[in-house]
Image 1 (cartoon, rainbow, N blue to C red):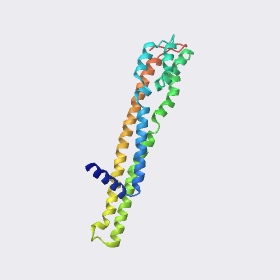
Image 2: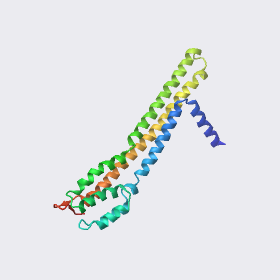
Image 3: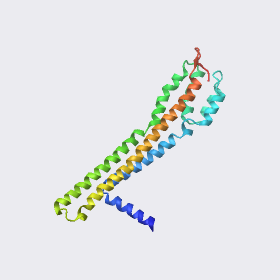
Image 4: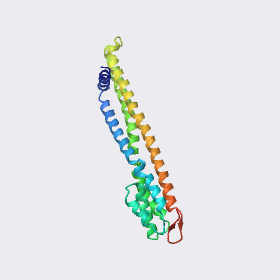
Length: 215
């Protein structure tokens, strides 16, 4: 019974908050979807798998890159795609293979950061919608005060309640969204540093005209 009472209260708050609550609900749904999508994309196994790192470091031989190439072809991770480019550059005798990798790394970095600006925008939109609902609620309250005076507080309570509910709802959506945005940005930075460390170890020391690399 207690849980039903809570659910009923939340439902009542939602309706008393007015039409702005629909926009906040959409922002919350969109933000949750983006957070889950980014968390999946940025998981370590999809970007810098530990097993692949160990295998590449163990088998990498610039004079015989076929073993490392085979391991990259068995993985769909970002590291596998970038290492594949570097290994092919070494195999074809290209100079400075790391530079070839970096050219493609820009596109991969954009994919890692995709949707993060939208997540930040949703946090701001939710906060602004909450403020908009606050203004609408106060307008309603003052309109009623102008009509009936201030003798009965119940008359204006609905408008004030709407203002408070939308403010709380806007902050309740905006604050967690900003927090997850910061966490995901930090995760992108961590993944990039991990990628750079492995790729530099594999291809960072080009030797001679043949593009030989010392791990």
